[in-house]
Image 1 (cartoon, rainbow, N blue to C red):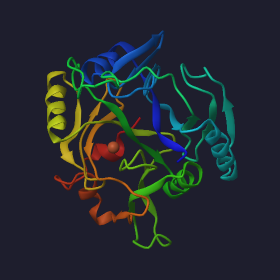
Image 2 (cartoon, rainbow, N blue to C red):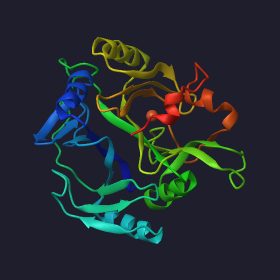
Image 3 (cartoon, helix red, strand yellow):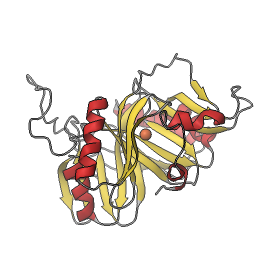
Length: 305
Ligand SMILES: [Fe+2]
């Protein structure tokens, strides 16, 4: 395995103080570093220095980082990216705080992807020696980890091709106009490289945009508790708690103070490379996205950052 996971997302926010209230006090991320205009966070069950970086100025996503297992994987992925026709640049250790050297390229969807092989390990909040099940004094939702992101792209098939060719990802679910892949137009694709049901998803839409990034939760109870906390903290809820037909995940979509959509996501089923892809056709897209309401709210396709 080369890519292990999506390791970080850098999101832009309009007001860092407001954003800190949301990400630290409501979601319960741990601040690991702060500097003028920037704050670095990790979830309690993450061991690397950070998984979320907020940068003041604008909205949307600045870049994603994918972590590979070995330093030598960087060269292999650079070659695959070049073979795919991407322009790749090298990044130095320290270009990103506490992150190794690696590579950077802009995807066909005009998103910036970085690939790195190590990040300073600061450990989970329960450690590794006789660890407890969770930290006793979690704040707010207390999200354990970053989970996945959904980005928009004009050409979903090309993005799926890129993730397969460059990162060795495989699709677990798709929305497509025809069950025959050759005849189909791909509307959306959910992809992973491990047993997580998806790490990245791509939905047809405006280039370079972010639909949401999501944090992991354990189960329905945790999702319900998060919804209660969002009411306590006046967090605008987009939809949920509900289930996705696609991925079977249990979910709430909500917005940060800058208007970026976040999600808390639990469940889903284990992904395997040899499991046949679940294919959804446009007639069932509403049930696929929101399994209970079976109706898309207008915001789902019109609000993004
Ligand atoms: Fe999601």
